[in-house]
Amino acid sequence: MTRGAIKNSLFPLLGVAVILVVWQLYTDVFAISRIVLPSPLDIFDACAANWDALLRQSWPTFSESVLGFLLAVVVGIPFAVCVASSRILNLTLYPILIATQSIPKVAIAPIILVWFGLGMQSKLVIAFLVAFFPIVVDTAAGIRATPPALLELARSLRASPLQIFLKIQFPAALPFIFAGAKVAVTLAVIGAVIGEFVGSVSGLGNLLLSANSQLDSALAWAALVWLSALGILLFAAVVVAERIVMPWSDAGHR
Amino acid sequence: MGAATREDICSGALTPRASVPFGHFKDVHQAFAQSGRAPLVAIENITFDLQAGHLVTLLGPSGCGKTTFLKIVGGLLSASSGTIQINGRDVQEPQPDFGVVFQQANLMPWRTVLANVLFPMEILRRADAEAVRAAKQMLTLVGLAGFEHAYPSQLSGGMQQRVALCRALIHKPKLLLMDEPFGALDELTRMEMQDLLLDIRRKTGATVMFVTHSISEAVYISDAIVVFSRRPAVVADYINVDLPYPRASEMRYLPAFTALEHRAGRALGITR
Image 1 (cartoon, rainbow over the protein chains, first blue to last red):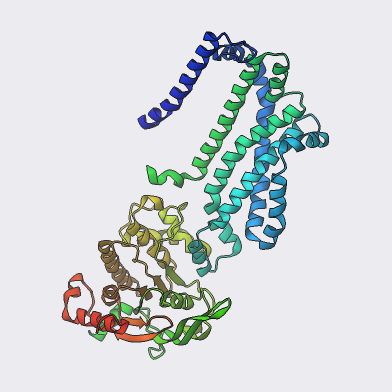
Image 2: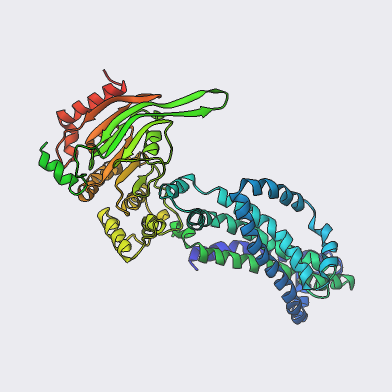
């Protein structure tokens, strides 16, 4: 890490520190009930006391989000390729996609649970459903945004449609695909938690609900902290993957 | 200039039957359909011959149909009517044995310089060790040795256009089509690139069709200039450039050079 990068990461840390101090002082000075708003130190204590439970419950939420996200990538990219390369498929499928996207996922979560049960599968499906849309929309946009001059170059060499796709359209779409994946991976965590809220036997969402019902606000907040850490971790994983897959993307700024 | 010089330049590129021109264009006409209006005639009537090993520029005002004509010659567009023959063959579709350079370098940002140059060889399934060696040699020729593994975003505009030139030449095209390739470059880089093109042509004997709207560029690099009129385009003048080779920048100030510029200017209707 360069000195500039360390400096740059100092500012968000400073921002967080200020918020935590103000929060702590507010709860102390005004003697806010722990049930209404636990102080940062209360939440830290709850994290420390329940770290094994938090860790155990993170695993199902983590796997549901990751598997749902990966499924969205595996299904969404080929789907987007079909939609972007065929006018008929575009006209047939795109309106249906938009229509299904406008259905609130919270509203269909109970139905998904009826179909797939209380276990991991139903959460995986919900995570998949929320992650699918950004992947498809961004991949299709990326393929359509292929520079026409590159397509003309390929045409001048009489490249086959497969060569054009593999050597030009797909790599040209990669920045868009990763932009979609970054949105999708954080949405996948939300999807998994929605599923756990509606009905589950494990997971951070489940832990959060049960802590709430026992008025253990500090633990509920601790679960929230873990959830956001999980989201940041997955987001960072996509950023790392992007750097590995697209080494050229920051080559110009070295 | 002497005939020997000309043959030096074209060595290996001349067709055995010198009487048959390499490229033959007769009554080429192009009209684009417009909804609800009369079709737009881009090219009225273009007729001229292209000699093997020659560099011919298409000179004309912006939007006069030069690029349209170049695309027709490359088989990227089909003409409404007329004859387009290269090497005695009718051109109706893209020709993989032609090379194309556009105004923008159009490199693939995800490929290194070397991989960009090798792109045509991959499409033609000839990207072997020999091709890699040829690509490196070509990059050295254009002064880019050591940049093989750089990405296009790390290069200047002029360097990118050199890579594009290598990419267009890597499969030893019979005809090199260049569409205002130096138009986006600054004046000094542009003059450097003109000398580079002359040098490459001397070494490869490539036949080149070059689109430009710069009179001095046309005179400096060409064997012949086809002056296009305003749309709908006809051949306003066909100018044989009989300046000796090797061309050098000092020639730009010779009376013969300025006389040619003047003639082209008259054909374009900008001077009397």
